[in-house]
Length: 101
Length: 164
Image 1 (cartoon, rainbow over the protein chains, first blue to last red):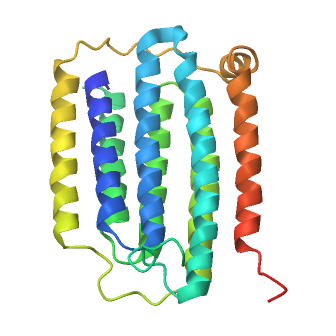
Image 2 (cartoon, rainbow over the protein chains, first blue to last red):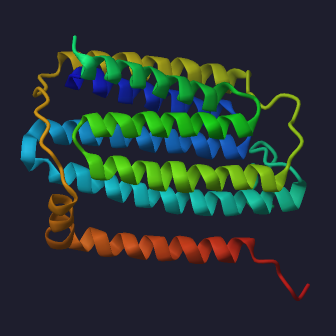
């Protein structure tokens, strides 16, 4: 339970999420990997806010803001996924590399 | 090594396990369940860091809202699983090397940086709420606007065009 361990865990989760966002082609899994990256940022924010003792309220507040951004991002992303499935019956990001589709 | 340390290491391990399940499992349904495992482990870590409000919000919003949302969409679309969902081309290898190097160098940076030790203070809902409605008021109001835009965008995107 020390700062170095928790921050390293956050870095490892961020790297796994970023790798998954590029490695996978399924749009739903790409969105899940983005969620992983946002969550690792939350862990780093809470850890660093708790190194300040009672002064670290700002970090906790920023975690709430990140949560709101993540929720809106997921709702828009899943709406896009539903549209993709209507157009081509699959949610492969390689199929939708052009904007005009 | 006391009980709290053991709990921290166990739930850190399950968090990494859940993240690997998300990235590596070919079926998106199991990826969503791995995401659930990851969120739940992180909620336990927040609770160990004396932040009970954020831990409960993590369980309610992420595990109860977002993961269920993903599961609904995966089951609603009911897509046949493609032959190779994973990208083993140059792009995938490059991403693996890049993020591996990023993790290694960041951990070296964290070790060499002179960090303060943890001194967890109990963050109650009262303290966070007081900050939210005084100093963080502008960001709080702005986030409500972001949520409104997200709702309108989601409805506008999935609406079927009637006159066509």
